[in-house]
Image 1: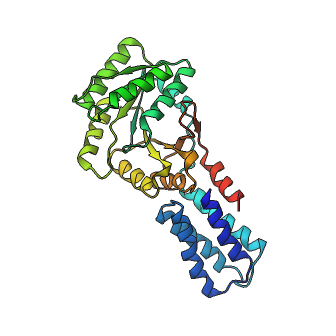
Image 2: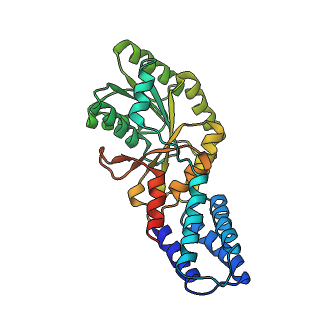
Image 3: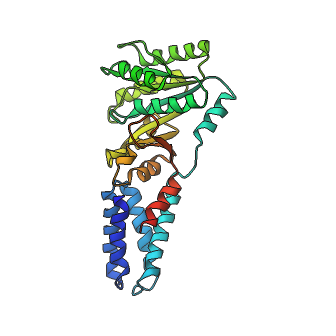
Length: 301
């Protein structure tokens, strides 16, 4: 990850020469910039850098070497872990717990255009199918050209059922009808795909709120593209404020060379990243442990 390489170069600079008071402000700015350049939200980058500089200011400024390096790593890591969502959700336990109370388990997926939302839903459907559950993929995107065909293709490829009512229908009514069908036909999980909404379009966001009111999902998941740069945490912030959600799926994680998106969306939302996308195949999805991820980032330093 570039974030590890950038911080390593900065640490090499700090730990190989004595520090004086005038250096600290420079390192504050440099540390912040290194994090922001790697898609860490500015607020988190600045507070992390400030915590490091504060720790450095408490020691003898002439001190340098491995002890100082370890201090920087320890301080930055502890600050990050105390400011991001480190709670863990076991997805299948979540589903099982919900099904013990009512059937079906309803999950709604939201996010902007092009994040891989429909593909992610198919991946989740396959996970549920392998657990001997009957999932139903629902196309509540009734406006985007090709949306129905795309969901149908994914559903057929993973071998699960799908529900659609064509184009031009009220998305909330589609979700409602899908739930009626699921109760009648014994589907245990309903996965609702919604139209990609640019988080800056408030009118379209209100439509999502209507779908959520009608379907009363047990769990709402925001799908975010790890390659979206700083826009990823803007999406996480706006969708939380306007719609609300319980977890995040971070797609294209395998192609993200910077590494800051996971930290940013977790910090902004205070919600766990339950899965990351690691490829185009339907099996290319895995559970995400953000504590282990942070440990890995700093282990490279």
